[in-house]
Image (cartoon, rainbow, N blue to C red; front, side, top):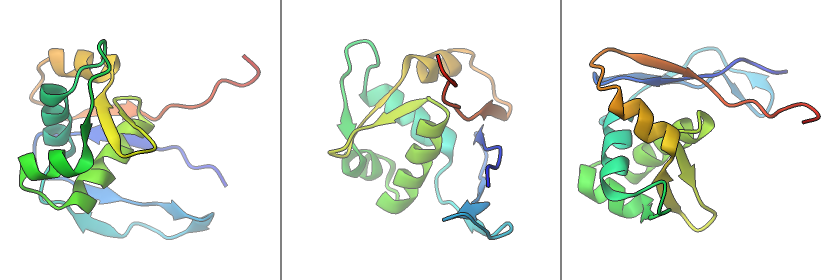
Length: 122
């Protein structure tokens, strides 16, 4: 069961909706986040670098944002799904070039980015 996923990067408070877990449709449960995905992306860009592949940790990022680690990690996985961030196997994280370019657009409005889909046979 494939569902089209989108990444919302918004400067205002946001809801995160998880549509599917383990192939089971769960509807639209809503979790109110204390920090926005955009704020996580902005702070990640401030403390990491895509070209030099400088990273930080989820723990350090959460501490800087004064936010719950689980909340920050949830946002990071959403950003990673849209290729705006990279999360390494050891918990190291960094912004991507695409994430940096999105922030350079300097828009105050909501931005919706389609999640990455693997290329078929390429």
